[in-house]
Structure formats: structure tokens, C-alpha cells
Image: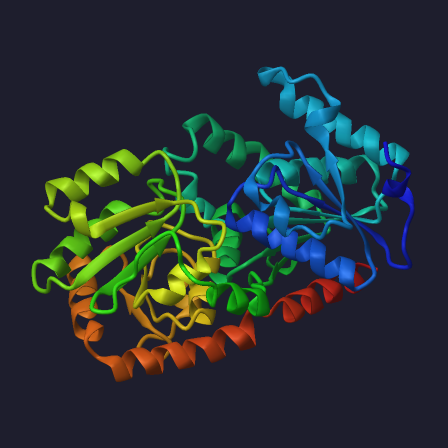
Length: 390
């Protein structure tokens, strides 16, 4: 164990808990929180169960990484318990002042640590609209749903504070899971605006954008939740009425083959480009005409704010939750009633050829994202929370 793990700076010791460095929204938010708090003088440790995934490159190299998976024998049936014991043992040797956990499994670690060390502050987080997400069997089993409802969410009351990213999610936890309203605080996801602007200006060498083509783009994991099948159906309807449109989808996942099969069956395979995961998606978004979101459910989709900073107009279904808190219909983009495909098609067809409207959307959305999703404002909110807890 590195001695630097318990050598503090002037600020308090804060542990950020996240399962791994996978290319997911919660991971990016956790990294932004760690980086931001470190720049404000806090001693930050980044605790993961497995040191895997592509997002580690975004973490400040000066931040200590605690890999719980490297400290235990990996036996699948017992690994969660082993990770938890490893973290509790770690805390006994190298105490923390505050734990900020992301994702349910890490929230469990946090509340159990609080039960063992009551003086330590624990802030837990959820970024999903759980009353809908728990019923998505492509993400969660019935066994997990029952365990979550019967046990885990009740343990959340042990924590000092619960942070979520949208008011719809807050209301969901109050109404559906009976958590105290005054325990829950809303802090929207941040984005690194300057970095996104810089990356969005990099040249695209992996794909040949043509000037006479209108490009629609979607970004995210190729899973049922993101419902890129819906986007391809919408796209096919658009192509049936104008032939100068192509679709780019960035991301990886188990739906890749079925998405290609759908595109083929609809006769648009040559116009649909599944380019996989890109370390820099922003240059692709910036080169595209319109960013599209057709998810079944979200938390507060960070990619919408990122598209806004890339000056790319956004059209999204008003799924639970997030888009309706990020897009003012007709001002910062287009918000389509949930699951309405025909309205989505008509909206796309009406704005694709309207350059002035697209420019107006892009400008208004950029200003909105700058005001609401800056990393500085996000860290200010976190510092306020830490000071309230004392």
C-alpha cells in the first residue's frame, strides 16, 4: 500500500466510489467530481472494484486509485462480499472523512461503512429513473429488482445525503421508494466545456463526412435501454422522403448485430454507420447536423449537454427522465412526446432543411449548457454539500 494514500493535503479526505472505468455516464461524472475536488485542495482517493475500462485516462494522474479487486481472490459468488470487506479493512487503516458513492453496489459499500464508522459522512448517488429501470430485464433481473426494493433502498436511509441528477428522479425516489424528500439533493451532471470544445475541433480521420449529406448522430451503448432500433426505424422513414441523409451511431454493445439486421431489412444498411466506441466522440457530433436521442429511459443524459456544447442541435424523446429538464421545446431544441415515432420523423423532416432554425437552436442550446452544466458550478455545489455536512 502506497503511503500517499493516507497523507492528507490541507483539505478533507474524500473517497469517490465507482465500480470501474467503463464508458458510462456515472463514471464520467465520478471522474469529474474527483478531478474538481482535487483542484480545490481536497485529498481524493478513487476507489474501484475493478481497474478496467477506457475512462481512466480522464482521471487526474495525481489522484490515488484504490483497486479493491486487486486485494482479494476473485470468486464470482463471493466477490461483492470480498470487495466490501477489503474496503472496510482499508478504511480502518486509512480513514476517510467523506465517502461519495456512485451506483447501487457502491452505495451499499458506503452505507455499511457509515454503519461501522458513524462519524464519517456518506453521500450516496443514483443516476437512473429506477421505477422504470428496475423493470428493464435487459439491465436487471427480477431477483435484483426484489433485492433492491426490499433491502438496498431501505439501507439508503443510513446515508447522510442522497444526490441525484434530475428533479424527476428525485420525485421518483420520494414517490416510488418513500425516501425522505429533505434527504435528496439535485446536482446535474457536469461537463468539461473547454475540453469538449477543444476535442470537437479535432479533424475526423476515421470517417469521410461529405458536404452534401445531412448526418444524424446517436451516441451511447448499443443496448435495449438506448433503443437505437427506434432511431433506425425513424431514420428509415426520413430516408423514404429524402435521400441525402445518413445516420451515424457511436457506441458498442450487444445490440450491434440486430441493429445491422434491422437496417438491412429496412433497406438503409448503406446509410447507417455503426462506428463503435470512439475516445473522442465530440468531433463526430460537431460534424453532424442533428443529434438524436430515442432512449426508453435515462437519468440526465450527459450526451445531450455535450452535443449542445458541440453546437449540434438536439432532438429527443421526452423519456423519463432528463430530456424534458434539458430541452426547452422550440428554443434549445425539439422535444418529442415519449415513443412517438411519426412525430419524431415529421420534426426531423421539418428542421433538416431549415438552416436558420438549426443555427438558432444551436446557439440557444450552447448558452444553456454553458450556464447549467459547467464543471466549476458542479464542484461549487459539491463543496456546498461537503460544508453543510461539516
